[in-house]
Amino acid sequence: DVKVTQSSRYLVKRTGEKVFLECVQDMDHENMFWYRQDPGLGLRLIYFSYDVKMKEKGDIPEGYSVSREKKERFSLILESASTNQTSMYLCASSPRGEPPYEQYFGPGTRLTVT
Amino acid sequence: DAKTTQPNSMESNEEEPVHLPCNHSTISGTDYIHWYRQLPSQGPEYVIHGLTSNVNNRMASLAIAEDRKSSTLILHRATLRDAAVYYCILRADSNYQLIWGAGTKLIIKP
Image 1: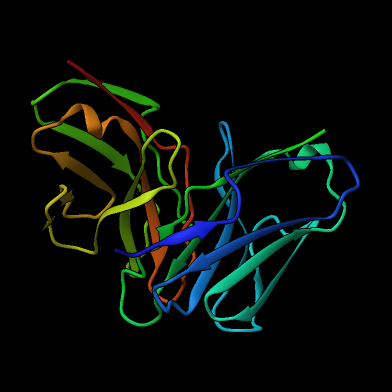
Image 2 (image 1 turned 90 degrees about the vertical axis):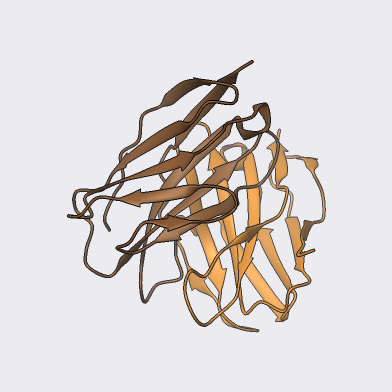
């Protein structure tokens, strides 16, 4: 069974802290994605990676960075957490190649910044 | 990017068919139509996709209008476990990205 796992389901951090969100997939997928989901706004893409050490900005990259040192792992980093980064964070992966490039999602991390 | 329009919510009775509509009047010729759903407290999951022809799989059917400006996701016999937010998404052929809208919250009444 395919699996995308995220390091935490719930996380509470203080303003100004550096936050690491980890995502691991076991499907040998080339593409990995980080989204945030907020009520009324749907899913918005923060960053994606199509290969190890490669990354592309999504729609809302400000305040975030990413790291992909190994194919199976994609990390989202909040350099200095702020209250407006309180959100649900979702990681996904998909294979390269033929459509539909189906994306497989993890369960999400609900981050609260106080 | 082409956008989609869906009703905010829909209700249906258990064990009845459900038709979830989606309008995408600015769709381009190379855009695929994808449907995902998100069950409560879970990440989204893929349901079905299509380009021009109607499609069936074990979860649902996808009916695509001839002009491709609208599509309908069909759940043939809804169960309580189908209660979720359903997203209709367009994806360009050459692009890995999915552009997500607000989706339709499907409520199933027992």
